[in-house]
Image (cartoon, rainbow, N blue to C red; front, side, top):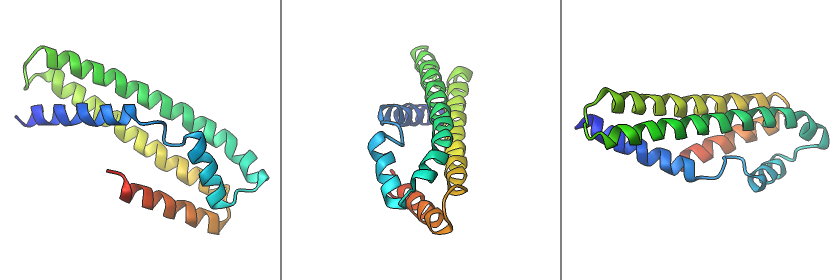
Length: 134
């Protein structure tokens, strides 16, 4: 029963995550730069950081979609306690965790380019976003 609930929960979570636009859409990107009063020099320094993160995020989301398809295939077999379901759920959780870790690394990598005041505001914005996200 626990595995079934976890599988359904992971499936629904992944569907929600996959359906969402990337965390830093062009509009959100511009908003963040306005909120932090990013200078042209900082913008230039942030570009490679943001490109690296965008690639990592794309990779993690693709890995989660692949694991989600594995979970769907395991569910089709109809055995709630199967090792395939447990493995797929575990894989989904790993990829979601890796994306979260890379997101945090990205925030602190960005912070290194910012002034102390901008860096503090970035952390406050990240904290607020985490508190408001379901």
